[in-house]
Amino acid sequence: MSKDQILKNTNAKLLDQFNASVMFDKELYAQDIKGSIAHSKMLALQGIITVEDQEKIEAGLLRIKSEIEAGEFEWKIEHEDVHMAIESKLTEYIGDAGGRLHTARSRNDQVATDFALYVQDKTIVIKEKLENLIKTFVDIASKHTETLIPGMTHLQHAQPVNFGFHMLAYANMFKRDYERFVSSYERNNNCPLGSAALAGTPHNIDRFKTSELLGFDAPTACALDTSSNRDFALEILFNISTTMMHISRISEELILWSSYEFGFVKMSDEYATTSSIMPQKKNPDVPELLRGKTGRVYGNLMGLLTVMKGLPLAYNKDTQEDKEGVFDSVATAEISIDILTSVMDTLIINVDAMENACKVGHLSATDLADYLVQKANLPFRTAYYITKDVVAVANKLGKDMSELTIEEIRGANSEVASINDDILEYLNLRNSMNARTSFGGTSTARTQEQVKYFQEWLDGLN
Ligand code: ARG
Image: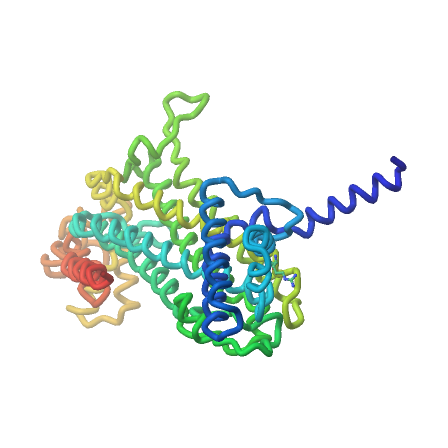
């Protein structure tokens, strides 16, 4: 073979490979078959194909589906994509009738339909997984509404809160995620099929029927928009990114909390791995991976946003690049939510370490300032500076503010020289936590109220 011939052959092969999506879009086989069956039913109902042909098409497609599921279907690059692979197999099985299936549709609305069905299916799966995760946070919260933990800002001790309250912060984040999946599902529940290549079709189709058969609310409104719209894919990528960001934040806390310096929690042995060189170590690989995977998930979102940004209407082949990132983000979200759920479920909580840590950093300092505002009617800023003096005295004595005697407080600043000794009650750490009774505050009573709210919300989902 001459060099030119070799190059020509190689190029043809390379181009096939380059152009093909079948090796990844075969993931959509079930949606493709479901969409085709619905389309064929509608075509028969409209008298566009015969009932016999429809029956042959449906039986053929179901046969192909079971072959795929049994691992007996041969995916070939030369078929380019999942749609062509299934259609050509169908024609091989049922002859002419197979060729009638593609009447009044194009691969443009077909792929949009398959992908929308996939995104909708996965939205439900992820939403249900989130429900379990939220439940786990609420269960932990219900058991720890009186467990003190240092509440922090800037990763510095700030005010005492209870651990249940801290868990509910995550329950709130994941509830917003849950609601984002609900709302994107509702917004995107429209059927692309029948938009055809870009402009609709002259055949007398019933798009409402197809939409109904596939479980969508209605057909999409504009064929031109439909054939290149990928907003639904972007939405699931964004929803997953935000969920992973929340997963990454709790992972970061678990990593910190399980360090020697914090010692607040211990992850069950199955979630901690040993070092290959330091036998004494237990590493938090699992939350580290959860945190790390978040990066790739963000990349998938940025990738598709970038693919879409320069596309003129309507379909362009660039859009074929929409799938791998979505498949990857979906798989990552599914496993990450499940893994985090079991990490949290088996977490060993060291109540003593959390409560001891509260005795460092003058967590009840704000309570003195609040006391002076409420009891002595001082402007908050004045009270703030007096409190600063008391903190300085505590630092000098090497004590936490909650451990100062009344004399030590009175000696700190002339403005508090005769302060009532009930201030000691206010500086008590548990009282400080329980004083925060404003709506959404950390007091045990408010936290219990939130736990109840969440339990009712969860009950209401089913
Ligand atoms: N494999 C293609 C994709 O995923 C299917 C649509 C092809 N349409 C076309 N006009 N070439 O986007």
